[in-house]
Length: 273
Length: 348
Image 1 (cartoon, chains in turn brown, green):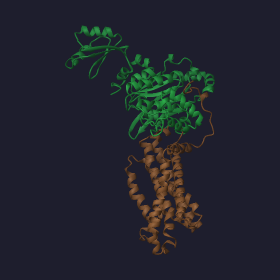
Image 2 (image 1 turned 180 degrees about the vertical axis):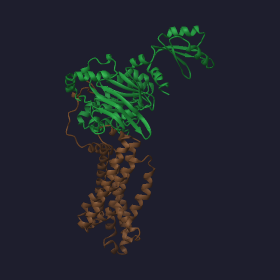
Image 3 (image 1 turned 45 degrees about the vertical axis):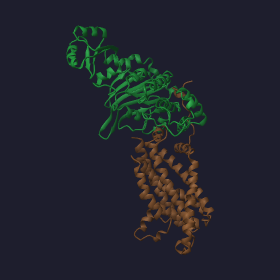
Image 4 (image 1 turned 120 degrees about the vertical axis):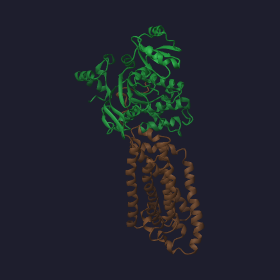
């Protein structure tokens, strides 16, 4: 039997095929099968440590001084949804930099996929889809831990799950656009140190940004993390209003779309030289 | 030119348009013996004035070629000749800067996905997922082509047998040898049963033994009638595998034909290789230049005497009073063709 058919008659009949991006998503899933246990464990450990140390430990000191500036809720309840959004940001950072860079630079699996029917944009959206799945899984675990700690005040907290995922994607999309163009991976550590960590500390996760000096405050408004933190918090506390939610979601969506636009261009430029 | 892309219907269609085909055929500088039946020629790839420019550098500088179904077609040339750039354009992962390129009659820029669905690619650098197993690599790749799991499973067994990796099916790719990885890449490229297999320097970087195993597998594919396009800077690879090839140099095509035709057209049947003591070489060159019916090429370490009759030439050399340290009479090869056409050696 011939290994590669020569006649056109031997071609596969055109089948109704799943969109190309889903094929790339399945590639990442196959890879993930080897590491998922570890990631679920760290996804569980992370909120337990933070909520334990900061929510309960530090929180007992904060609560003793009165929490009027936090809106009258316990520090744990204030902190937990903020951490949910922050955790999504950090996961997005990890998922959209090194794996993307490695796929094009070290493993060259992107070049392999580019030789198949898949287009650069399919590779991008396939990975974004996978990132969204990981964000969702991680956020579910986080929410369960939050609930176990008694850090949830409203059933609306369920809506914080897609918001957390969207917060992550608002970071992942532009970071992917950047990562695929990188010649060296040193930039990622700089982004982490001088971008992600300051955002984590100053975007309203640990204290309301009204505590920040007035000159810096507008900076917090433009960072996607602040929008994610504020919306997750108001959902968890049950204080969200539709107008406020729309603005935050709109902003995060806009960033995701703009990032995706540039990421598709960057993928195309990198893979179709 | 709208050649039929569909095989079965293509034959009848082409037959119906015989006069037109005849014209096209005569327009090409292909020797008559090459094509037995004009109606059966189905052009899969056609390039006219194909160009690729990177900044100021013209990597591919206006080349013309055609590939017909069932043939093994090669691009022979040294590193930097533009072979890989040409290959990437055919593979629809590099848009041409100029000229025309049609693959299966389709435009690679607009129809990339549908063209790539019918191509298999073995890139110069291995792009296997070394963290996955041999089998998983084929699975992932088959899924990229939208194949069902059971189809992939059946083909995987067959292909791993073919490339002699069946017993490594569930091993990780990372520790495999270079030759094994190359064979796996070939197996992977065949998972979609491509109509054309593109091989960019398929044996570069392999040790001689591994190279011969790969050649053997490619030769089997050729015998099964698979259409192969390969680039190489090894003349023995080109001679053994290619039905027809183009010699590329500095982005241009220097010559085209079958290995035998190229040798007949650009070299002599035999080559006499002479080595002299270094201080005698210059003097020898002068004397050899006076020999009748020969052409000489002076290399750093030896002199090549191109002649129809090596023995006669060697006798002439003796009559001149020259005493080479060593002498060797061999048949002309593509290396000689390349030397003649470009003044340089292939593997420099």
